[in-house]
Length: 308
Image (tube, rainbow, N blue to C red; front, top):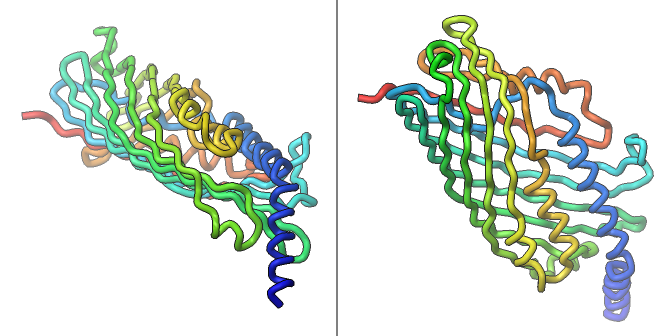
């Protein structure tokens, strides 16, 4: 009995060693599919980043953005069709919470933000005979941000406002990832831990068009970039650096640097409710490819309070 157990364990270890390179390639392809989906599946109706606060004299703005991630990526062919013969998949879950406080002077707004996130990704590949290979990654991050917004054109300040926004954020990241392992062997592994700091930079413009007293249209454009240099440098001497580099793409570069859209705002009881995200979700209902199962959602809410 002991001999058979040892033989089975050795077989699993041999499977992990011989399939490691193929597993890394499959996982990388799934990540590329996800990035392609994220960068091409946006609707024109989208809310701007929570940092896009428009200065409103003698006003304090309290805002919050929340994103819940629940996505499974399946294998696909080069033409984009679902590959039903490949059992590999990548399941992502987690959240990002970002409160924001902005203080408005006459033409300038000063914003302070906090970001807290915890996200994970699990790669799974099933084989015949009940054998399964898995790989697990976990990323937790928290940090502070600061941004400035200004109204450069005084003639637009009464009803319609053109705002220019610049800012940055510094995050402290705890990143853990395991090797590919079969069945219960994965439980015997100690994951590789990488700690690093991540800097985010942002610049954007939005135009608030007050069409009615309680209704506004907000076209916007935003450029944001995550500097992953320190992350990649921290992993130079770690095991399986290629797997970690793919993690960095997955968790920190899944959105395009340049984004734009149109948001719609409704003012009700002092709350500025944005419905661009809701309309964008409706617009994408029948456009999701078969290789993506996306149950994620996000929302943002802000409240303005006049200063004393």
